[in-house]
Length: 277
Image (cartoon, rainbow, N blue to C red; front, top):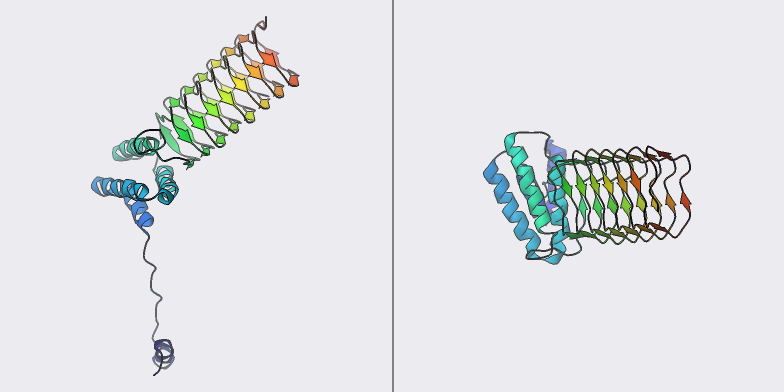
């Protein structure tokens, strides 16, 4: 018996018939992703319900599901339509609901929201692995207070349209804020960072509060521009700390700060008298 493949080959050769390869079927996540970005609101909501069910079905589904949701947020147009703006808030809330300990919490999750526009983003009290926000634009207040980051937190080149809050956050590894812009206040009081912290070249327009912060490794605050008050009262630096080339335009306060490693204030500019008693 002539095999099917040989028969198709003969048919194509003798009769010039084109045999098209069959299209692979879309995976459930690919289907969900397309519906999350659909124009119709009901289709979007149906995709979100299926997304939550898919992630809850098995532990190994959680990270791929989060990747799809982050991808949908990255692809939402800005400013987009009014529906797009509301949908952005829905997707943000759905994301953080699974990163905050409690019902529906997905342990050991990582998020990638690089070069995304986020509005009123609230990651407070969440517990995540690595989180990537390089080049992301945060409109409204951005909250990361009392959050725990088990992996690196990357915010290099990020833009914060208002205040950013990290009060009492824990960084098990590193924090990268290189070249970021903060138009409001930066609240870092009581943070604990085990790994290196980099703020090199960051611009903070408002108050920068590092009161009681504890840094277990090197801190690079070189070439930072502090536009408002810079408070490092009772801060603890276990490793090297660099403020080289930094400009303190407002009042600075290093009262009771402890430096355990090499510290540099080379070419640092102070707009007011230094408080370090």
